[in-house]
Amino acid sequence: MKRHVNLSILNGITKDEFTSKIYPKREPVILRGLDLGPCTTRWTVPYLTQAGGSYEVKVHVSSVCEMDFINKNFLYRSLPFNEFVQRASEQHHKDFFIDATEKYYLRALGHDPRKDVANISVHFPGLAGDISIPEFFEPSQFFSSVFRIASKGAQIWTHYDVMDNLLIQVTGRKKVVLFPPTDVDFLYMSGDKSRILNVDSPDLEKFPKFVHAQRFEGTLEPGDVLFIPALWFHNMTYLDFGVAVNVFWRHMEARLYDSKDPYGNKDPVPAQRASQIVDRALKALEEMPSEYQDFYARRLCDRIRAKAFTQEDKGDR
Image 1 (cartoon, rainbow, N blue to C red):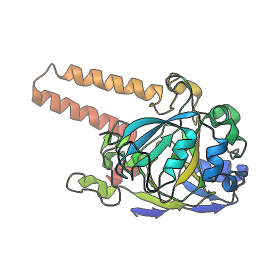
Image 2: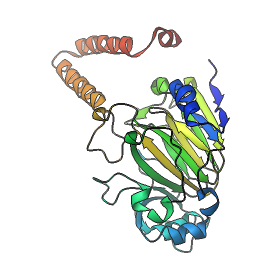
Image 3: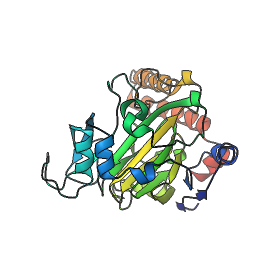
């Protein structure tokens, strides 16, 4: 199996072409030449600081490029949006929290992060009119639109999302690395995040199975749109100061998603129930001696794998 795949780049795709030819394949692809509105020329740093206003945003601040959500090698700090944009666009800072070369990353939230879903039309009305979101899904499926803005060099941890999304790269270039859902066994997961920070030069003594992961890679140019199907793992490196908008929508019926999840990143409700059942099963096995626990746990694993993988998948493992 080929382990490195360059992402396909398709130009001028229409909604019908996307929904009939691209979407059913459930693979990431870079879409180029779409009409995204005036944001691609307007969203300069001076314009963003003026039109975006002083709405307070919570940002990640780190002294290193590789941000690690598992071990939390960053601080959460609040800044007015216009001040955050100015700082993130600079390589050296007069005002800082850690040091003069610290990196910033924004994943925009709602007014009340515990309840409100991110929506640039609601939270950034002065900017929302500049961007035309490709109509590649039905309005009833829409979940959120999220600003993602970061300093040059910032690398965002490998993770998966439970909803389909379009990553609209408005300004700056971004290196993207993705892995298919079937490679979850090779990514050393902690929750929805991989423990492998450096996907380019991983510690193979610590993560030996990572060599089996199939890597899809590409570079987003300003104006590109990356389609990321749900459950595909992705790692992002900002080659420049970059501004992007993520648009998430529901691929499955709305009832299957957690209605109390404003971030849209909790596992679907049936998956949560299944995980709870597994927890109870493992607890039940603890009533027996260790050799019985091992034996029946392995039998449970065999049953789950037989259900999870197709015959072709089984042959690859």
